[in-house]
Length: 373
Image 1 (tube, one colour):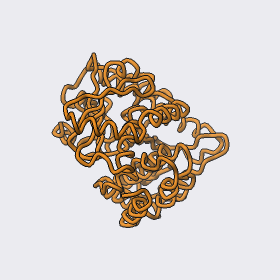
Image 2 (spheres, rainbow, N blue to C red; image 1 turned 90 degrees about the vertical axis):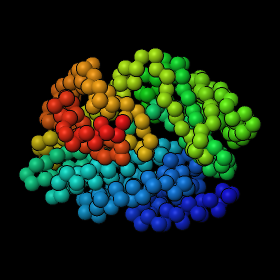
Image 3 (cartoon, helix red, strand yellow; image 1 turned 120 degrees about the vertical axis):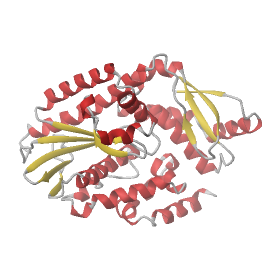
Image 4 (cartoon, one colour; image 1 turned 180 degrees about the vertical axis):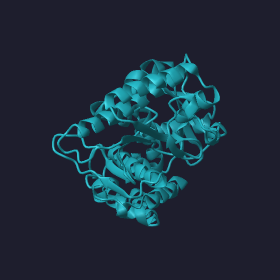
């Protein structure tokens, strides 16, 4: 299928989802007219008729955005022509997921999207349940760093654009060298993200993908080495046509997985709490909330890093992990000054629930998570 008919078919498929069409079609259509549109994860899910799109439509339905005060502000700044659109899109989707979770949790009296104020990073929402007033902030978390995300987005996107990988997919493995550099890669700022994205585009061209497919077609068991942004990667055949899988990365120390995840989770949490604290201390604050909620959303259906963290907590009950979590909670509480809840993706199929800070927080209901391993 050529590029133009594919875009037309994609928008036709999007029309099957009335809420996604209402809130996202305008910016996604803009993204379709940009170079490298196929790197956008939501557009690829729509092309593949992924069940994730139906799940997202249900999330929008559960959120009842029409009843949220200032809900138009969630998507007001989304423009598909912006360089960082994909990142901003998943931030907006995290806000929708927070609203859906809040309604499920009883915050039905009033949910208000806070408007941005000059000179201050305003948190996302004020929510009420009876006399309880809660300030909420939503974040999306990439469990991979941007470099590996861009490699997957680039390979899968080019496969769709070129009509490649129809007989098999690709598996990307990052080894010891990536292990040594990951602590720096996972904490990169916007400039670093742009640099990694450009590096992936320069390395993974249409010619590169065509060469990978030819070589793996003739020699199915071969392992092909490429280097992106100075990081060596291995490419192998994968049994799902059109898909690109990130295989479990080699770790010299298994605890490295836990440490890196906790480092990233703490970074997202602290960023959200600083934003909330700054707002509460500002003249724009219109409430004296009794607590805060930080909602951390993922980006798609396949995020095995989360499962590794749950396994460390629920199956093995690693003392070192619990000790680290206790220290993070204390630092976070000291920063904010009011009680807070952290809500994260848990289990398979995914659901969102309160993050456990100690073994006592693991209730009998959480066997749902344990049974998913």
